[in-house]
Length: 310
Image (cartoon, rainbow, N blue to C red; front, side, top):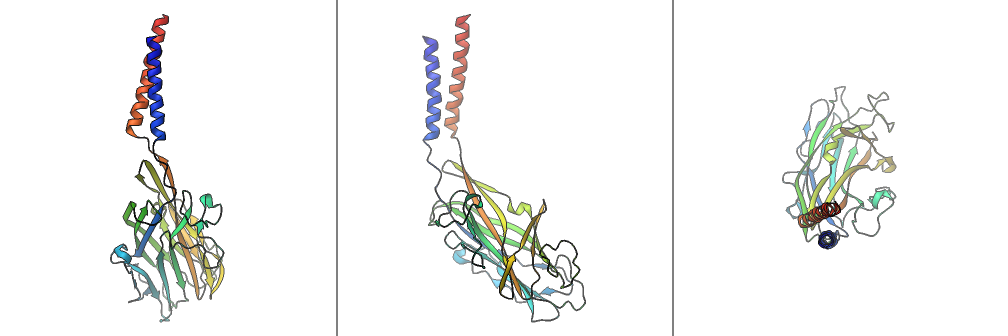
Protein backbone atom coordinates (compact mmCIF):
# COMPACT_ATOMS: atom_id res chain seq x y z
CA UNK A 1 0.00 0.00 0.00
CA UNK A 2 2.81 2.39 0.88
CA UNK A 3 4.52 1.58 -2.39
CA UNK A 4 1.35 2.40 -4.29
CA UNK A 5 1.04 5.74 -2.46
CA UNK A 6 4.62 6.65 -3.30
CA UNK A 7 4.12 5.72 -6.92
CA UNK A 8 0.93 7.73 -7.10
CA UNK A 9 2.69 10.69 -5.51
CA UNK A 10 5.49 10.53 -8.02
CA UNK A 11 3.01 10.30 -10.87
CA UNK A 12 1.24 13.37 -9.47
CA UNK A 13 4.49 15.28 -9.48
CA UNK A 14 5.07 14.35 -13.11
CA UNK A 15 1.55 15.42 -13.96
CA UNK A 16 2.16 18.77 -12.26
CA UNK A 17 5.30 19.20 -14.32
CA UNK A 18 3.40 18.58 -17.53
CA UNK A 19 0.61 20.88 -16.41
CA UNK A 20 3.18 23.58 -15.64
CA UNK A 21 4.52 23.51 -19.19
CA UNK A 22 1.02 23.75 -20.66
CA UNK A 23 0.24 26.75 -18.44
CA UNK A 24 2.83 28.93 -20.20
CA UNK A 25 1.25 31.33 -22.68
CA UNK A 26 1.62 30.57 -26.38
CA UNK A 27 4.36 32.37 -28.33
CA UNK A 28 3.43 35.69 -29.87
CA UNK A 29 1.44 35.23 -33.07
CA UNK A 30 3.35 38.05 -34.78
CA UNK A 31 6.10 40.51 -33.99
CA UNK A 32 6.96 44.04 -35.06
CA UNK A 33 10.38 45.45 -35.91
CA UNK A 34 12.16 48.66 -36.78
CA UNK A 35 15.57 48.96 -38.40
CA UNK A 36 17.67 52.13 -38.61
CA UNK A 37 20.97 51.65 -40.44
CA UNK A 38 23.61 53.90 -41.96
CA UNK A 39 27.20 54.04 -43.18
CA UNK A 40 30.18 55.28 -41.23
CA UNK A 41 32.81 57.33 -43.07
CA UNK A 42 34.23 55.06 -45.81
CA UNK A 43 37.94 54.28 -46.12
CA UNK A 44 39.28 54.61 -49.68
CA UNK A 45 42.55 52.98 -50.65
CA UNK A 46 43.89 55.44 -53.19
CA UNK A 47 44.32 54.74 -56.87
CA UNK A 48 42.69 56.63 -59.71
CA UNK A 49 39.14 56.42 -58.30
CA UNK A 50 38.51 58.54 -55.23
CA UNK A 51 35.86 59.37 -52.67
CA UNK A 52 33.75 62.30 -53.89
CA UNK A 53 34.00 65.03 -51.30
CA UNK A 54 30.69 66.32 -50.02
CA UNK A 55 28.77 63.36 -51.45
CA UNK A 56 27.56 61.86 -48.18
CA UNK A 57 23.81 61.89 -47.57
CA UNK A 58 23.10 62.66 -43.92
CA UNK A 59 21.12 60.12 -41.91
CA UNK A 60 17.96 61.89 -40.69
CA UNK A 61 18.00 60.10 -37.31
CA UNK A 62 14.29 59.47 -37.50
CA UNK A 63 12.99 59.42 -33.97
CA UNK A 64 16.56 59.51 -32.70
CA UNK A 65 17.02 55.81 -33.52
CA UNK A 66 19.55 55.97 -36.37
CA UNK A 67 23.18 55.56 -35.26
CA UNK A 68 24.76 58.95 -34.67
CA UNK A 69 27.14 60.29 -37.31
CA UNK A 70 26.12 57.86 -40.04
CA UNK A 71 25.10 58.64 -43.61
CA UNK A 72 22.59 57.11 -45.98
CA UNK A 73 25.03 57.09 -48.89
CA UNK A 74 28.25 58.32 -50.51
CA UNK A 75 29.85 58.48 -53.97
CA UNK A 76 33.19 58.07 -55.76
CA UNK A 77 34.53 59.44 -59.04
CA UNK A 78 37.38 59.16 -61.55
CA UNK A 79 38.98 61.50 -64.03
CA UNK A 80 35.72 62.20 -65.87
CA UNK A 81 33.98 64.05 -63.04
CA UNK A 82 31.18 64.93 -62.51
CA UNK A 83 30.35 61.32 -63.50
CA UNK A 84 30.17 59.29 -60.30
CA UNK A 85 29.12 55.96 -58.88
CA UNK A 86 27.37 55.80 -55.52
CA UNK A 87 25.82 53.56 -52.88
CA UNK A 88 22.84 54.12 -50.62
CA UNK A 89 21.02 52.25 -47.85
CA UNK A 90 17.33 52.25 -46.95
CA UNK A 91 15.87 50.70 -43.80
CA UNK A 92 12.35 49.49 -43.08
CA UNK A 93 9.96 48.54 -40.29
CA UNK A 94 7.20 45.96 -40.37
CA UNK A 95 4.80 48.54 -41.84
CA UNK A 96 7.10 49.94 -44.53
CA UNK A 97 8.89 46.71 -45.56
CA UNK A 98 8.58 46.45 -49.35
CA UNK A 99 6.40 43.80 -50.96
CA UNK A 100 8.07 43.64 -54.41
CA UNK A 101 11.41 44.49 -56.00
CA UNK A 102 11.88 47.27 -58.56
CA UNK A 103 10.79 44.99 -61.40
CA UNK A 104 7.35 44.71 -59.85
CA UNK A 105 7.50 40.92 -59.66
CA UNK A 106 10.11 39.65 -57.19
CA UNK A 107 8.58 39.34 -53.69
CA UNK A 108 10.39 40.93 -50.75
CA UNK A 109 8.06 39.56 -48.08
CA UNK A 110 8.18 35.78 -48.09
CA UNK A 111 6.10 33.26 -46.18
CA UNK A 112 7.85 30.63 -44.05
CA UNK A 113 10.40 28.61 -45.99
CA UNK A 114 10.21 31.04 -48.94
CA UNK A 115 7.05 29.19 -49.95
CA UNK A 116 5.55 32.29 -51.56
CA UNK A 117 4.73 35.97 -51.23
CA UNK A 118 3.51 37.01 -47.78
CA UNK A 119 0.37 39.07 -48.27
CA UNK A 120 -1.32 38.93 -44.85
CA UNK A 121 0.60 41.95 -43.54
CA UNK A 122 1.79 40.00 -40.49
CA UNK A 123 5.41 39.20 -39.68
CA UNK A 124 4.80 35.67 -38.42
CA UNK A 125 7.22 32.96 -37.31
CA UNK A 126 9.28 31.75 -40.28
CA UNK A 127 8.39 34.69 -42.56
CA UNK A 128 11.35 36.38 -44.28
CA UNK A 129 10.96 40.14 -44.53
CA UNK A 130 13.46 42.66 -45.89
CA UNK A 131 14.82 45.08 -43.27
CA UNK A 132 17.47 46.86 -45.40
CA UNK A 133 18.11 47.48 -49.08
CA UNK A 134 21.52 48.59 -50.37
CA UNK A 135 21.47 50.13 -53.85
CA UNK A 136 24.50 50.75 -56.05
CA UNK A 137 24.31 53.28 -58.87
CA UNK A 138 26.99 52.61 -61.48
CA UNK A 139 28.57 54.95 -64.03
CA UNK A 140 31.58 54.37 -66.28
CA UNK A 141 34.46 56.12 -64.48
CA UNK A 142 37.61 57.21 -66.26
CA UNK A 143 40.67 55.78 -64.51
CA UNK A 144 43.09 57.91 -66.62
CA UNK A 145 45.20 54.81 -67.07
CA UNK A 146 45.84 54.62 -63.33
CA UNK A 147 45.46 51.65 -61.01
CA UNK A 148 42.22 50.73 -59.26
CA UNK A 149 43.00 49.40 -55.83
CA UNK A 150 41.40 46.18 -54.67
CA UNK A 151 39.25 46.78 -52.67
CA UNK A 152 38.40 50.34 -53.67
CA UNK A 153 36.84 51.07 -50.27
CA UNK A 154 35.57 49.55 -47.03
CA UNK A 155 32.81 50.91 -44.83
CA UNK A 156 31.05 49.92 -41.61
CA UNK A 157 27.28 49.71 -41.60
CA UNK A 158 25.84 50.57 -38.19
CA UNK A 159 22.30 49.66 -37.21
CA UNK A 160 19.81 49.93 -34.37
CA UNK A 161 17.51 46.91 -34.63
CA UNK A 162 14.43 46.76 -32.41
CA UNK A 163 11.97 43.88 -32.05
CA UNK A 164 8.52 44.55 -30.61
CA UNK A 165 5.94 42.26 -29.02
CA UNK A 166 3.21 43.82 -31.14
CA UNK A 167 2.76 44.89 -34.74
CA UNK A 168 2.08 48.45 -33.61
CA UNK A 169 5.63 48.66 -32.16
CA UNK A 170 4.58 49.86 -28.70
CA UNK A 171 6.13 47.13 -26.50
CA UNK A 172 9.88 46.68 -26.93
CA UNK A 173 10.97 43.05 -26.55
CA UNK A 174 14.59 43.26 -27.76
CA UNK A 175 17.07 45.89 -28.92
CA UNK A 176 20.48 45.60 -30.56
CA UNK A 177 21.70 49.21 -30.90
CA UNK A 178 25.34 48.41 -31.72
CA UNK A 179 25.20 46.13 -34.78
CA UNK A 180 28.32 46.76 -36.88
CA UNK A 181 29.09 45.01 -40.17
CA UNK A 182 31.91 45.83 -42.58
CA UNK A 183 31.47 45.83 -46.35
CA UNK A 184 34.28 46.05 -48.90
CA UNK A 185 33.82 46.96 -52.56
CA UNK A 186 35.86 45.98 -55.62
CA UNK A 187 35.37 48.31 -58.58
CA UNK A 188 36.28 46.94 -62.00
CA UNK A 189 37.32 48.51 -65.29
CA UNK A 190 35.10 48.18 -68.36
CA UNK A 191 37.19 45.56 -70.16
CA UNK A 192 36.62 42.23 -71.87
CA UNK A 193 39.13 40.25 -69.78
CA UNK A 194 38.04 39.98 -66.15
CA UNK A 195 40.13 38.90 -63.18
CA UNK A 196 38.38 36.39 -60.91
CA UNK A 197 34.73 35.36 -61.01
CA UNK A 198 32.37 37.14 -63.39
CA UNK A 199 29.04 35.27 -63.04
CA UNK A 200 26.90 37.99 -64.62
CA UNK A 201 29.14 38.19 -67.66
CA UNK A 202 29.48 41.96 -67.82
CA UNK A 203 32.70 43.90 -68.45
CA UNK A 204 33.37 43.33 -65.58
CA UNK A 205 31.11 42.53 -62.58
CA UNK A 206 31.62 44.69 -59.47
CA UNK A 207 31.94 42.81 -56.16
CA UNK A 208 30.74 43.54 -52.61
CA UNK A 209 32.18 41.37 -49.83
CA UNK A 210 31.09 40.89 -46.20
CA UNK A 211 31.87 38.38 -43.47
CA UNK A 212 29.40 35.54 -42.95
CA UNK A 213 29.66 36.33 -39.23
CA UNK A 214 27.90 39.61 -39.94
CA UNK A 215 24.72 37.60 -40.53
CA UNK A 216 25.00 35.23 -37.57
CA UNK A 217 21.72 34.56 -35.69
CA UNK A 218 20.94 36.42 -32.46
CA UNK A 219 18.55 35.37 -29.69
CA UNK A 220 16.49 36.91 -26.91
CA UNK A 221 14.06 35.61 -24.28
CA UNK A 222 10.57 37.04 -23.86
CA UNK A 223 7.59 35.81 -21.80
CA UNK A 224 8.80 32.23 -21.47
CA UNK A 225 10.01 31.78 -25.04
CA UNK A 226 13.39 32.02 -26.74
CA UNK A 227 13.22 33.91 -30.02
CA UNK A 228 15.96 33.26 -32.59
CA UNK A 229 16.50 35.91 -35.27
CA UNK A 230 18.11 34.79 -38.53
CA UNK A 231 19.48 36.97 -41.34
CA UNK A 232 20.51 36.47 -44.94
CA UNK A 233 21.34 38.38 -48.11
CA UNK A 234 18.88 38.23 -50.99
CA UNK A 235 19.86 39.26 -54.54
CA UNK A 236 18.01 42.28 -55.85
CA UNK A 237 17.07 43.30 -59.38
CA UNK A 238 19.61 45.21 -61.50
CA UNK A 239 18.80 47.71 -64.22
CA UNK A 240 20.56 48.79 -67.41
CA UNK A 241 19.67 52.37 -68.36
CA UNK A 242 16.41 51.99 -66.43
CA UNK A 243 15.42 48.56 -67.78
CA UNK A 244 15.39 45.56 -65.38
CA UNK A 245 17.95 42.98 -66.51
CA UNK A 246 17.90 40.35 -63.78
CA UNK A 247 19.18 39.91 -60.22
CA UNK A 248 22.60 40.33 -58.71
CA UNK A 249 24.39 37.11 -57.65
CA UNK A 250 25.11 36.14 -54.02
CA UNK A 251 27.94 33.63 -53.46
CA UNK A 252 28.63 32.16 -49.99
CA UNK A 253 32.36 31.41 -49.78
CA UNK A 254 32.20 29.87 -46.31
CA UNK A 255 33.78 32.66 -44.27
CA UNK A 256 32.76 35.50 -46.59
CA UNK A 257 29.79 36.36 -48.78
CA UNK A 258 30.36 37.99 -52.19
CA UNK A 259 27.67 39.86 -54.11
CA UNK A 260 28.31 40.37 -57.82
CA UNK A 261 26.60 43.32 -59.53
CA UNK A 262 26.69 44.08 -63.26
CA UNK A 263 28.88 46.81 -64.76
CA UNK A 264 26.05 48.57 -66.58
CA UNK A 265 26.43 52.19 -67.71
CA UNK A 266 24.35 53.69 -66.32
CA UNK A 267 22.86 51.02 -64.11
CA UNK A 268 21.63 50.18 -60.64
CA UNK A 269 21.91 47.04 -58.51
CA UNK A 270 20.27 46.17 -55.22
CA UNK A 271 21.03 43.82 -52.34
CA UNK A 272 18.47 43.02 -49.66
CA UNK A 273 18.98 41.99 -46.03
CA UNK A 274 16.12 39.79 -44.83
CA UNK A 275 15.18 38.68 -41.31
CA UNK A 276 13.15 35.79 -39.92
CA UNK A 277 12.43 34.38 -36.44
CA UNK A 278 11.48 31.18 -34.64
CA UNK A 279 10.11 30.74 -31.10
CA UNK A 280 11.01 27.93 -28.67
CA UNK A 281 9.46 27.29 -25.24
CA UNK A 282 11.81 27.79 -22.27
CA UNK A 283 10.97 25.34 -19.43
CA UNK A 284 10.45 27.16 -16.14
CA UNK A 285 12.96 26.28 -13.37
CA UNK A 286 10.07 25.19 -11.12
CA UNK A 287 8.79 22.88 -13.84
CA UNK A 288 12.22 21.31 -14.22
CA UNK A 289 12.41 20.86 -10.44
CA UNK A 290 9.02 19.16 -10.30
CA UNK A 291 9.94 16.90 -13.17
CA UNK A 292 13.21 15.92 -11.45
CA UNK A 293 11.43 15.26 -8.16
CA UNK A 294 8.88 13.08 -9.93
CA UNK A 295 11.55 11.02 -11.64
CA UNK A 296 13.42 10.64 -8.35
CA UNK A 297 10.26 9.52 -6.55
CA UNK A 298 9.52 6.94 -9.22
CA UNK A 299 13.05 5.64 -8.86
CA UNK A 300 12.67 5.19 -5.09
CA UNK A 301 9.31 3.50 -5.60
CA UNK A 302 10.88 1.04 -8.02
CA UNK A 303 13.62 0.23 -5.55
CA UNK A 304 11.00 -0.27 -2.80
CA UNK A 305 9.09 -2.72 -4.95
CA UNK A 306 12.26 -4.72 -5.55
CA UNK A 307 13.00 -4.85 -1.82
CA UNK A 308 9.49 -6.03 -1.02
CA UNK A 309 9.74 -8.76 -3.65
CA UNK A 310 13.04 -9.88 -2.23
